[in-house]
Length: 281
Image (cartoon, rainbow, N blue to C red; front, side, top):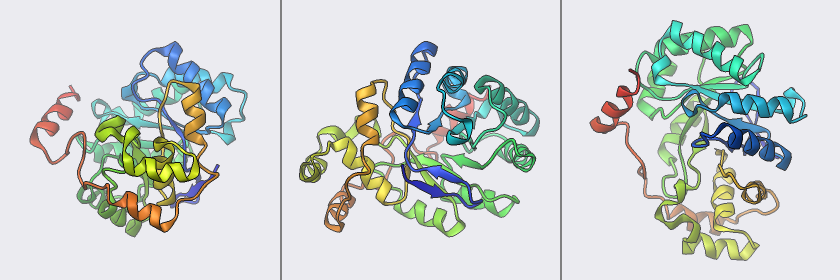
């Protein structure tokens, strides 16, 4: 496994396992156990996923020392604000059966996320959170948060894949020492990622799949990735991306796939904002 060093010196695996949309508790527990057995050490969950307790059970059963795991969760919009966020983080720790979290993120840039961040800063200083960060923060909101808070976010988790490579946003993150992390590294299969001819042509050179090439491309750009699968054989394939290296020519070919926009939603779209903020009630 390769690691990135966050702005506070914490080491974070560059590849992990995400549990988004694994709502069934037994299935989620099995998947996390399979992932850890396969070699994953970064596990990414969220309050909104409804599976923190299942992740916690898997962590308890896996037999891997706690210090070797890197556990992330996220504070949802309905828990925004200092008091609510602090209480919700304590609840997340309880569900996950942990004394501390390696990383916690503000899930969406809506509601009283300043209050949420103050609660996170406080728990960070107490040692209950090893690193704090954000998710889905575009450059404008990220800079605003950095300028008016004491602790610079360690991570910003945003939609990042070969069709939306976040080149400009990542430059802003680098300027302020924020690590980019990808959600949706496979674009959830959109734009026929798994059969894309460019990715296939590159993969054929190394006997690798489109999915492996897509992950390798992000990893070589320094992007943390958290691919999700409920199939152990796919988990094995997704982590098997450290035995080859894309050439500059390969990287340049894949760079052309970038459309520079989301395949899912925009936080600048009023309808998206109306929908997401409605989830706070």
